[in-house]
Image 1 (tube, one colour):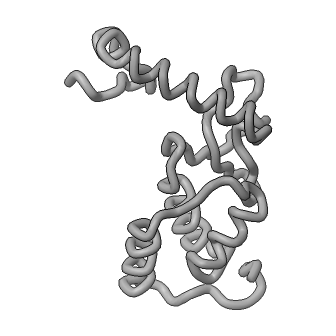
Image 2 (cartoon, helix red, strand yellow):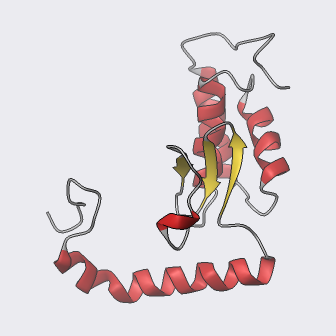
Length: 137
């Protein structure tokens, strides 16, 4: 299909040709915004978990096998990372996840829609919050 990635994670040539104006615009916009804000391409939120954009080249990636949450310049990255931090037991709830992320990457913001989705996720949570030793807040 046209919008799907290849099995190795790359884009098909036809997709690249079709969407290259948009992709180049987004990359350029992100690069200019980073230059202006002097923000790092990504920030480590918890051991092995990063939020932000992909670095410009593989040699600028963190060592090991990092997990980078990149939803391209939107609060979706923060919402997804907040949910992941709760699921892994790093924090007790998404609000503390948001605080932890903002400590590491203050520029990122969530919208009211993201807050609502995380609140609904919290209300429908299957497991109880993990209190105690491995919760940071």
